[in-house]
Image (tube, rainbow, N blue to C red; front, side, top):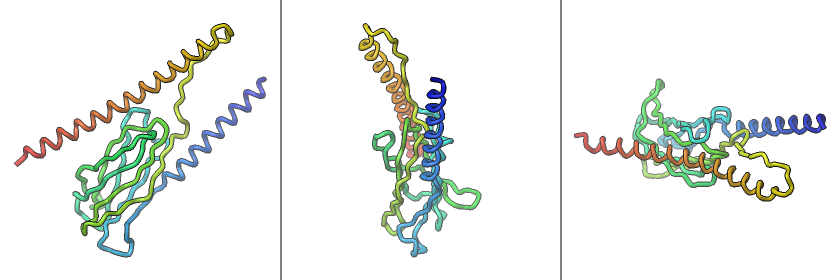
Length: 200
């Protein structure tokens, strides 16, 4: 029995390690330009977060992009994709010049429960639009909630139903925390825009 348990634990450890390696490969640095041969085109550089740096569910995760071939910090960039199966579309706020005088844009996104796919849409100075490839970010091990079930055969079905409901309640609690964080970000952006409009 102990040998069987040891094998299961070893297999689980190797499986999580494999998932982490796969996610790291998918989260490598990336630069893109719709027409790389045109020096007037803005190039966007992005390093996706590593799986080991993904915050706890509900906390904010920073997405950062850098533009090359320009010093304009007002370039329009959007992040579009899906987080845990839900569509996301976020506009980056005004950027800032970094130490290399490259415009840098950041946006905070609630960390996914399991996975997040996204890509960038960049408006070029000539009015054209550049679209990046898709990035895939996955947790090494997906959080999973279980409630131990008693062995009594007379109440097995009832206990199983209760366990399922409690596990679902835990998942809803995490989704609520993520939604509250998103609403907080929307409110902060609304206040910032209102303040900017009131300035002379």
